[in-house]
Length: 171
Image (cartoon, rainbow, N blue to C red; front, side, top):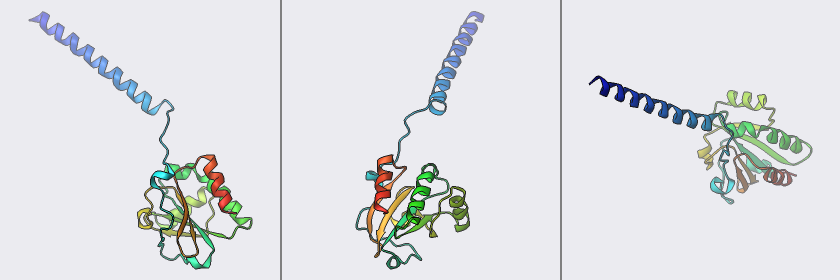
């Protein structure tokens, strides 16, 4: 009986060691090793051209074009994209006639702090859930005409060629 108990204990210890090793490998792969993170793709979730936007307090007719930034303070891709947003805010200030409106689900004061902390200058900040304007993910960039109709949109952290496309359209 004593011999059987020792064998069971030995096998149990080996099983514990194997499970611990497998769990360790999974955790290291998941959290410590760099990997290919999926990026949101604009074609999968972008708002359709021709969609009429409705954002409380935005007078679309006052501007030829409006760029809507649908962001969230807890969106990693929004934060990662902040240098690009600063860049096009600067380009816009160099003469482009386009209004820049940020739409975030957080309170206006929290949104202002977030944008300020990241050096993003906008003309107006609105509090609204992204889904209320037809946006399924953040960050989303939307160009709307003077009637509030979407003419172009992008979703996610944009690759360099898409950033260049946005900058070209803003001129």
